Length: 267
Image (cartoon, rainbow, N blue to C red; front, side):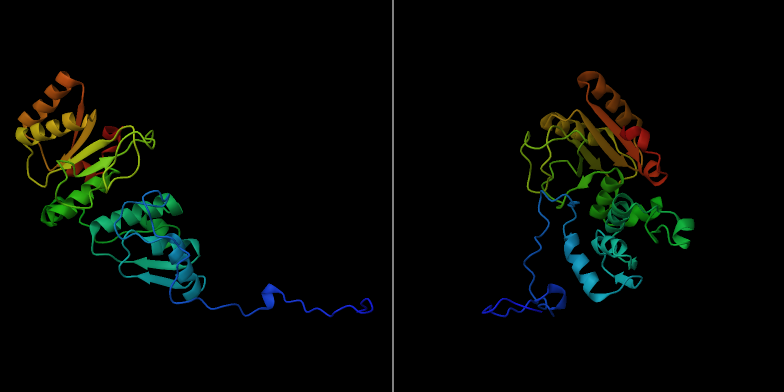
């Protein structure tokens, strides 16, 4: 190669020819999940998807099997699926399993059907307490979370100080900035619907009276109640409350949720 007389020779280095710099043991370039993150689910130990993308990319190859024995809300499973890995998730919490299943359906577009799972085009969730007997036996807070998530709501992070609200549903029309939120709430405003859950054989009128008082205090025009059954007095009071105030209480039974007969009542 000819150069001009007196020119200084130069050495070109191409990026794809460099060895690069190994990752340090401390990563600070991936921010944690905050209240404004689009991927935030409200699950207390949720990790950023970018973090699991990096870990799985660095430690496996396409079609390898990724096992997450404490899968929580399923971030590792979503990352593994997007990176074309096979995956298995395990968690002791029924709440975590239902959050994970909903995320796989919504984010990855995977159907929860056994025939499709057998041919590698779907997934299944095993050993959840999908009977009334098992749901009666699980811890109360776990039962609350199960019911709230089944209705598409956001459960409370703590068991105390909930002021009669076990979870919240935010309508699609909710927008930011119109209502002051608590520390464990999403920054969504306009209106929200409370969910009250009772792990008891039959809800009575005093339970409904307390829920009505909370709805009046919070100025909620609609609320949802979940239990195994309702006394006739409780159902009569729900009707009377609507006639007096125009506010709606929608009672769900555990059986309706198990049988997935809830969509028409959520509308």
